[in-house]
Image 1 (cartoon, protein in one colour):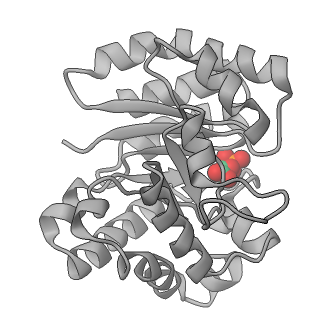
Image 2 (cartoon, rainbow, N blue to C red):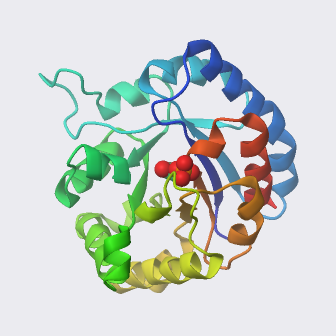
Length: 259
Ligand code: PGA
């Protein structure tokens, strides 16, 4: 049984009090769902707040099963990089996860596949667990390039990973055209790409490792489409943006993931 993961990417939203309140509400509400799923699978809930709130959110979640991560990190572990945050700095707050290669980082901040791969490696070096985001744009999908784009993004990272590192990798498939647009991929469309992701991993490593890799879907996951997406055989969880900012909505998605 693969791990199931509900992740909330708060992006550049919330302020201190709201962030702490949201984290507490998620922890309280997900306790039941996580406990219930314990017999069925290893479900996890991970929150990705903005950097200034990492430490207060880690503190607020102490003693709960909800985990925390950074939305990005610099590839170097320290140095003269004004405004950047390193993996070891993030890990020192008690956070355990990192998002790497989110499409907003790739598109708005010019992160290349190589930069993303370097960030994934720096995450491992800092004892952070990376969620590697991949996904095609609308133009790429319409041009029939979805699978080649995913393979390129994935292989840049896989080529540099050791087999033991693959065991803690999480991949999130996030079609760019579905992020924040209200247009989610259909469950069948997502399932097809998730299966292709596993085939790429099997080709580079082995089938067993590919079958253990959790692959999350992201892009306009909402309470009303989460059940259908999470029921797909290749979908192991959700990376949620907008709907993770309201505890009630996110908790419905947590329950769909942890079912
Ligand atoms: P969304 O964002 O749920 O608001 O579409 C998902 C993401 O960017 O991770």
